Length: 532
Ligand code: FAD
Picture (tube, protein in one colour):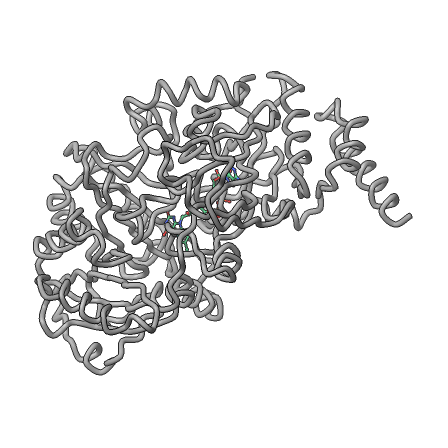
């Protein structure tokens, strides 16, 4: 009786709220609820929450929030919107953990799909070779894997796979993000030099397209859709399930930081470590820039506690800009002697400032979940829900020195709230058939300028100042033709998007016309206007 009442009430709500724009939903909304089990929310709190994201700068309320329990809830919702045809303004955005920066997961006056409520059928782990696999040409076909919902958080996948001694291979620095959210961009961290980004570590997807079709895809089956969706900014379909490749998990991590004052030596060492001959030296390679900092360990994304904190605190930067190479070596305790030797061997040919070798050992989970610890600290001080005018760029190797000279030397001299990440990756680990856009060189750098706007809006730590710096950086790159591409891109006009995609624009357009011809999906990316 209780579930019937809930069902009845939710139908009444849908009918009363949707009758003026969602004319065909009345009869079928009943079956949507009966079959799929999900429900719509229309209350002010749900709508307000769906208009928030980590960037904290763009807030567009939807008309409804759909909380799916099954794929058919999502498919039915999109099919309804599709059947309304081009005269309807209604759009649909999948919302993962809403860690977008500029409203990318919002749907102004449309429907936001709360992907985290899609839990069925739950995570399913496959430990050994898949005898049914028909892609025997693919060396990954023997890997263990886990099938997860597109709304699953990476942190949950970590904990679940570790129960079987396994782990995903490629990560982001922060794990409280959804699979669908990171796969719609790329998912890059210090493991990408070896394994490629997260989009290179997915074997299969289940997608609901912009016409409401549910389609399974992989490199070999519906390959065009598979590649479109990876890095596709949510434009071609909603990822409802993903098959993530796994590897044996270590238990411990040697976490190392060394400092450079010479940018050339810093990048030369980074590039040496990601080159094929040293590919196994470390499991994770990143780096960051320290500009105008007093305390060297003053880095909010870090829970790094060196074994010798006094030495670390005593090091004086004397106002110099420094570059920190961050490395990790995974290990199991029984292999510690071998690992120590290996680490020593590889550190011996690097050219960091001798007194600046900082080391610590943490568990694998502590290492991967390191940013979350900082999140909790910032939350307790009210510094998490502030505007985040982040700028993420891919810079080609050939121009990284020019870029660094101007950006770190002249533009970013006063902002000090948030880290500036910089590390190289190998393009050969990225599949060019995916939708993500990267520079046209084998080695390119991820540069993440991750500022928090905490002060007066016009002060040095304020939003206007930081946005002004970001604009200056983009204009400098553009004026000097540095071949830089935005990661987690944000543009206001289709001309800018065209320039961003460059030679990939035509195929992006073509894919859109096939998989989401009415431009229903992910309107918050501002690439396409719904055809009206
Ligand atoms: P959302 O913000 O909810 O959605 C992002 C986009 O994807 C939207 O357009 C949305 O409509 C679409 N989308 C969401 N779910 C789906 C789905 N299931 N199917 C299709 N489309 C979908 N990125 C990195 O690569 N490396 C990092 O190290 C990294 N660190 C970060 C640290 C922090 C603290 C934050 C806030 C972000 C970081 N990011 C990083 C960026 C992050 O990967 C992206 O912002 C990602 O989109 C966030 O995932 P989400 O689940 O919050 O996605």
